[in-house]
Image 1 (cartoon, rainbow, N blue to C red):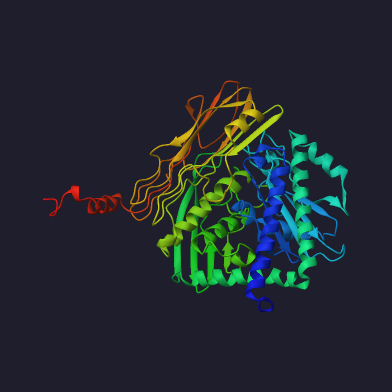
Image 2: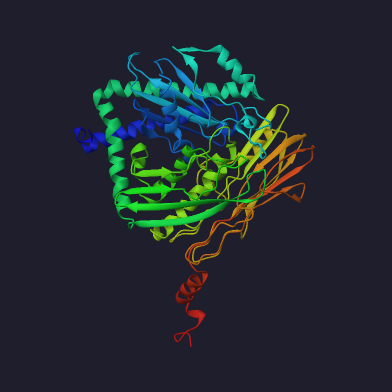
Length: 531
């Protein structure tokens, strides 16, 4: 179908579709109530065609977007009708982990035929379960993590289903905030449907042709990029630092096969699913692989489902990356996804060393503090790995997340917390020809008794350097000055301090190379000319 549109028309329509997805995101951020969405922007929006193919996305959260097609597929299995809006978070039916609540709205401009779907996904700061914030470190099954929502009609034939709204509100700790954030997601989806309807009025059937054409274009671009990677089989392994139940390392193994224009990514050899919450649904593993593919190919390729058509991802059923219910999974979305990205990057470093950076911090450093009437959630930035031609940035979100920080003023205004320290962790990045980025220090003082959950990684195993670069420094966690494990949930009194020191990124290239280059550039460093 792509040859039915000339290049100029295709580019215009592509940009218009992506603008719709971006505008949906702006509506969601501006309309939400919780700081996690309004300040951190822990949300994502996208458009899909009638067959469930990703057509356009806002540049939001990689782990949200790569897994979104599974949500649309789960809704399509329920035979949606015009005027419906489905809500879901079930990790085993289109979701990722329970706090990420997804709304899927059919787009039917004439009220009859569904031409596509508007989709929004947002991390809700609490969805029930055994601990405030719904991210308990010691959860042993999905039921302990919160309210599990299979694809369910939140709106039917244009009318909100009051019973469903009441059911959701009755099972969370801050129902008013949840209702407000859901209303913002509804508004975002409605804006997407309005804008697509307007585009259909302007362009007619050419818009539907563009749905296919943009994917064809992206697929061809990514296939061309993959062909530049040498054919072969490349393997790597890494570990997670326990599952919240034990501290035993959990191996993740990958074999990447490059064959012409295709990538086959196989996680055979990865650990079986575990008792704790670091299991990751296959959709999350796919999302991490897709992120790596986007990173090692041309970043200007339009982001849509066509980018991922040349990629195949396999993980054994019942394994860490393809668990069976009722496995606990809340940490899989945030932490295991990071390690999956790391290990695939490491495998491809042997194939395309100029395209792969050293390891970044490899964790989202999840901090959850909750008590009566409040639930605070944040991921804390750290060091990014250096690349072949640049130092790694410091104090940034790395890998599968793309959120902002919560400004100190907003945090202290919204929660009974005070920020004691917020600074770069100087010198935590690995040395090298190009240095890894430094991590952060974030210390909070609680002004009320609360439950604290920390879900973190890279506390024992440092982010690795590449091509002779040194490793970044591992992170550290403290409660009232006491070092605590990477994953912990504790009830603590008012006055407690929570301190997180995040990892630095790995360095790239030998530091000695850098010293030699600096010496060559500086005549005063010695040599025959100076003598």
